[in-house]
Image (cartoon, rainbow, N blue to C red; front, side, top):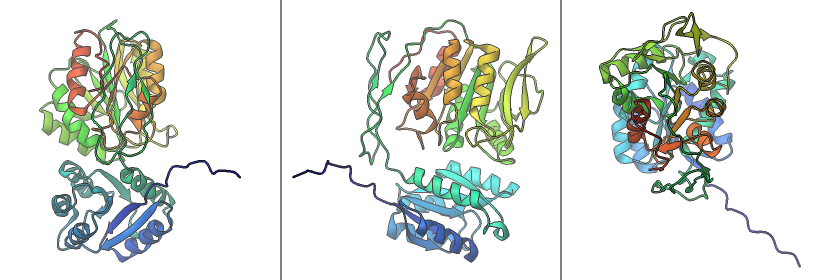
Length: 386
């Protein structure tokens, strides 16, 4: 008589509410969501007021929220939704207009977890990319948070790291993380490069103001965003930190203390010409399904500055930045990543950490102080995880 081996119970479906005043959008998205494995559509809403009511009743894992709706728009609905259902993650859906880009960034500041640019209504039926991205983001945002397993120091580390407290909703076993050997300062960095995606605008609002004016090195940022959004993000960060943050232009010089963001739909790379560092922009094929992507920037920094580079990876979906961090580590550069507990999605920083390419894993509020200490030549990374 045989015995069945024990198996892990299936993950519960991600419970979703869809709020959009367009009947066409609701019809198509309803079909996509109801046909998708692992997703349960538990309600729809036709305006912001209706969205608050449904969120209060259903307490969904994810709310897909349109920006422009009657009675109460998406921006006005966010605080009420989060008061009624604090654990709900809000995914903003907006067409690519300057106004909607501005509103979407304000929505992220109010507590929305992510955004998704959507085609105009007349092009939705054939928007396979939009359907794929919608379902992917719903699954990622609705996933149960998992506590990171204790980091395992390598034999060259002299002290055992501590473990951050598990985030709410943890349940699955976590993948163990092995930190890279303790990074002793060999050379003060010439440049700081930073990559992020989902949750990145909120994280940048914490990190960039804390670095501005204090960081003497140039800071180059890749945030996965479409055109128009990156210019508005640069404006928002300028207001937040009091230092000019610019959307990069091809051939722009990289000066001490400057802060540049890769523009949407362009890869940004660091090069050296006639002894001076500049950034170049190109529309070569997407990397890790992204343009701009983090890896091209990180790999170019490794080629130009080698060990005189500090890399930071913040919250984001996917694994963009992992290859770049591997290349940087081989050159002797320092790598710092955000921890799981404070990340909206621990995809990008988690991929780097789990591959053993991170020297330090820190909560969001400790990213800037840790980076500044290293950039100012005040010693080595403390490998403690919290």
